[in-house]
Length: 120
Image (cartoon, rainbow, N blue to C red; front, top):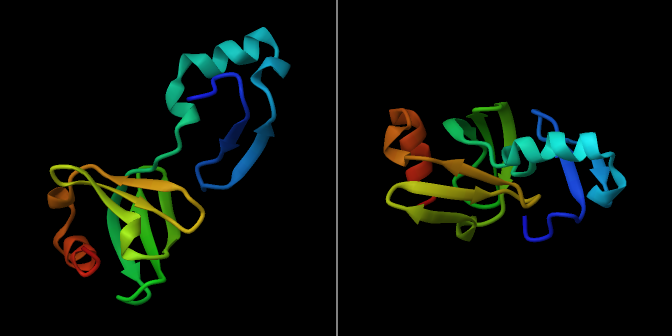
């Protein structure tokens, strides 16, 4: 967003990069217009809906989570990679730099809250 004409990575629902565009100006006007219609396409920040499993309660730890974009695994390198945004909202950054949001930690199911509390 800080460089609207710069490079762009298109990521699939599985979290894997599908395409890399070096400069948006290389795209046709029609393609640029499609991307401009929905800024969320440029911001990959899945919302964690449930923590299904964690490999260990020390870091690094591999988490299996259900997000609004499907089930995935992420590696939490350190507890400092969990940041409070506001109130009970959290941003969890995995070992690849992908940010996962928890909109309201209190809204998670009891098991997910219990797993998460071990890292807070």
